[in-house]
Amino acid sequence: MSKQTIIRITTVPLSLEKLLTGQLHFMSSFYHVIAVSSDKNRLEKYGQLEKVAVFPLEMTRQITPIQDLIAVVKLYFFLKKAKPFIVHTHTPKAGILGMLASKLAGVPNRLHTVAGMPLLEQSGMKRKVLDFVEKLTYSCATNVYPNSFKLKDIIIQNNYCSEVKLKVLANGSSNGIDTSYFDASHFSEKFKNNLKIELGIQSTDFVFIFVGRIVADKGINELIAAFSAIQKKRSDIKLVLVGPFEQELDPLNKKTIHQISANKSIIPIGYQLDVRPYFAIASGLVFPSYREGFPNVVMQAGAMGLPSIVTNINGCNEIIENKVNGYIIPVKNQKAIQESMLSCIENKEQFSKMKEYARAMIVKRFDQKMMWESILNEYRTFEA
Image (cartoon, rainbow, N blue to C red):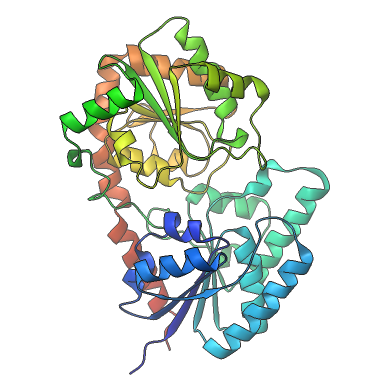
């Protein structure tokens, strides 16, 4: 008996690589899986790695009506030919294009995962347009999966769709966390010492780390200001920034850029395929984001044994319990970032207890295999 076809769609292959690592390969044991995304060369490499079929479809992350219409038409004809019993989309642009084309093509099960809402930071006419697109996406979908319970509440509060369509799988997240991969025991003391020397970090330094896009809505302006203020009291601290600068999309202010380039205790290392070595040499994660779905970074840090300072937003406040495995602080609040970072350094007994709980809480609640089984069980409910 031939396998039924499932099509998974993201706007760019990076989302497949980072948000769904291993998941499509796992699903390929049960279904014929096709990954759809833009950037043909990178998508084909992803397909080879995960051992799944691919279909390249040019999509943009911006509002581009003509290109978007072309993408919907191409996807419609592809879906009519492939005849999937499930189309499952991730990311906003893939969501609207994928759900619209799937409905037009008569795909019976149209699933959309919501992993954060950039529109929440918008206002005016742009917000109205994005609200309309969000509602249209959900209206075309048969099922909508917020990847956190708080995100589900936000969707209901904004009347984006009826509650009957909504479901959070397992304990939240889109892919869980591979706790055997994100494990500090993979890195020896010698390795960590050598990396610290390479980065100019002293053995006595308390090392904070941020992992993600270096942009304004990740709270980087506030983080850099808080770190610079603490430096006036403490010289034994470092801040490692792991991730790409995206000045064209969400620029940092000029003062922040200057502080990053001028301060030798702030160490920007750019995008890294493997972030684990940098978690391994860190003391704690600072993640003062304005908005998230269900942040992988916070789960990764926890699995590596790091307490996290996070903002009181959906996803973050479902992974971290205040003063148990980290601190939960207000959004856009430099003073709160500063105070919590100082507490990590100075309240050694509490910080030690948080480190003790960090990994165990992730393993218990967000292990990847548990998440994959939950998604597979959901798919099986749609089987004929």
